[in-house]
Image (cartoon, rainbow, N blue to C red; front, side, top):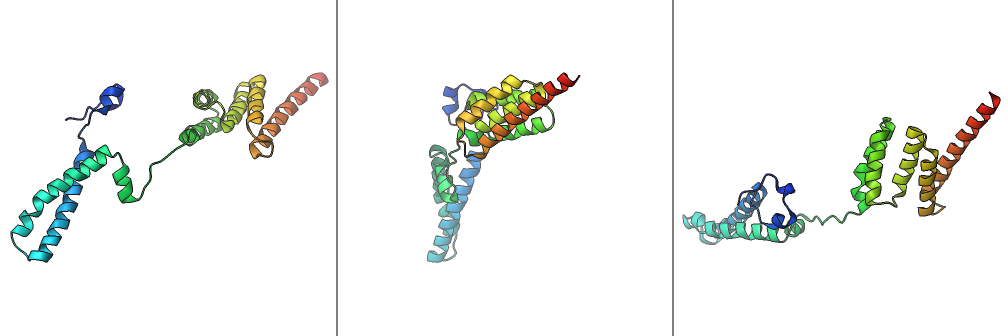
Length: 193
């Protein structure tokens, strides 16, 4: 079969169809070559050098190629992982969102608060109890939008989710104290004028 160039856009049912792509061909060729080489070496040592040493391993190599292709395609990456010693990644939702968290921090640092807040909302829609993102949300709401109420709500959620002996809890309390100190200073400045 020919691989559909818009494979990602296919409905889920159509994605289950087996597509022979360049990776499958490479797996077949490498499996065939390894099997051929092994069979060739065995024949060379047992019978000596002859024309049969080149011809006989050929069907064995083809069978080995199909076996490798079968093991890798229907066994997922299990066969490859067994051979290479890698194991399947079991990522938590927070590990999957780590890149987005770094992008939020970057946008915040660059003063791109609209983009940062949009990404915060996306991440929180996937994990609404993510304390680090809630703390970032509070910082973005306060520093970028002067939204004291929204910042306090986010900080309150952080304090509910995190045990009081954790650094994240202390950061949330300290940030809330900073907001309050700023507001108190603002009130004092207004009274002096």
